[in-house]
Image 1 (cartoon, rainbow, N blue to C red):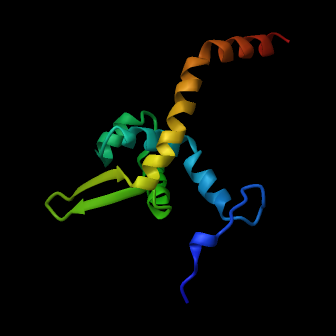
Image 2 (image 1 turned 30 degrees about the horizontal axis):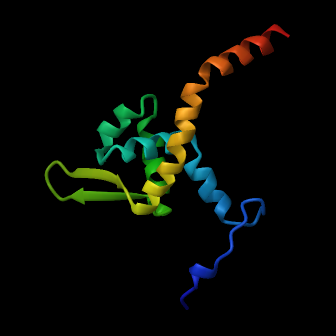
Length: 124
């Protein structure tokens, strides 16, 4: 039986809605950074790991698997010795990254205000 996903209505505020898992995946620290890095172009695993400084091999692998599961990342493996695996964004992943990039820019641009707020908070 084929489901009609085109008529699916999602509501992230509903605890039973599966859209929450997608939101949780793409807004995770490593997923945001992986999507932003892959927006620059395809990466092999170790190059992506270097680009997303601080992520462990295990976390990056889990993040990429979750993004692949949700249709955001394409994993292409060439059967060579040694195997060559490259990751890139799907159109859906590219669209997600386009929404996340302004958030990243905003965070970077607002760090002086954030640091000042943190200092004020610590002083109270």
